[in-house]
Length: 196
Image (cartoon, rainbow, N blue to C red; front, side, top):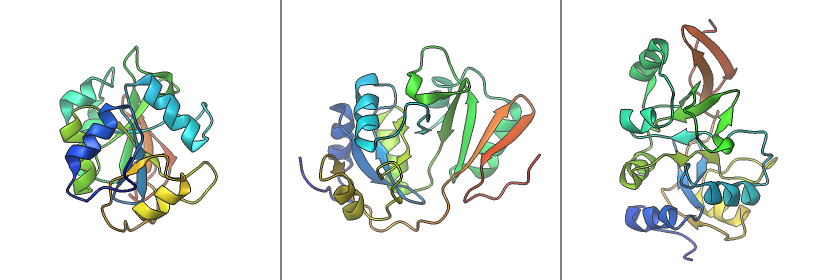
């Protein structure tokens, strides 16, 4: 495995995901760890690498409505309005999950989805054609990383890095759960939303 990939080398990055391996990639805040979000074996590999408890669901990046429909049992009108106003952007929406999704993606019956504004992250998901996990590229309990080199070092070179330069860091994405007309802020973050 190469220690890093060139920023424009999306073909190699997609190949990493297709092989079920873990990919480090840039987002609008920090570097993330990506695997095929629908591949149970890849999800288990990601969980073991990160050292994160199975009780914490992993959020995913999507590229469009068709991908979203494959994950969500329903998309409430309120969620559609939030997407129209804030996607692509640092807003993660926890929406009712479709039956049959991997357990690692589900929390309280919901799957957490986002569309990243980072050009490499967006192109990666679009070219791969499936949802990609969006957990931060750090071991559980360690600080999040803002460079591909720091993320690569944090995992002792056990994954491939798509180097998109330094990311701005800051607050993580804002996480809200939407059920019908009800909105619950689960994690305040980079996007400021008024509580309901």
